[in-house]
Length: 224
Image (tube, rainbow, N blue to C red; front, side, top):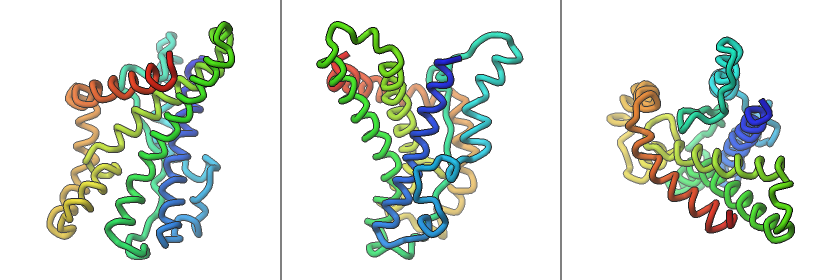
């Protein structure tokens, strides 16, 4: 139960920072929509989505109550979730294509930054407490969760399928014709995403990438 609660709180913090990063970047680029709607905040209550932030992430706990057995927060890479998307008006930015790419990428970038900070913190704890690192159970566990979940959610959001950030980055970079391409993709994208999540294909592609990044962060940066 403690493991689950830790994981969920870390997830909630990560998706909150993710949406704040979108809102902050949009505001810096000239679009004040999110700020005026109270979404440029680190208060998670402003970003909670009932399905993506509550029901789906908490489903392992719900299932465990019925089954009578504990289920870990992360079951391989079967876990995913999201927060309420930040409202953005693309026409308000100063440089349309560049700024909208930055806004789309900001959420994923925030996840990688959090993972770097957590890894550096782990390295620092290892230097300060070289002989007593194992005794720092709670902080170490928290930082490990921060790295693992941040990396996975950032990779997941870079998938070029709407409504994920990766799709918007790809569409803007390749200059998709919105009227001919984006409409059909955005209507079918969520169904395609649900299909990918429930098949081995997504995890077959992302798992090796995640394994490489995890080795870099845990071994290379954190020194574990």
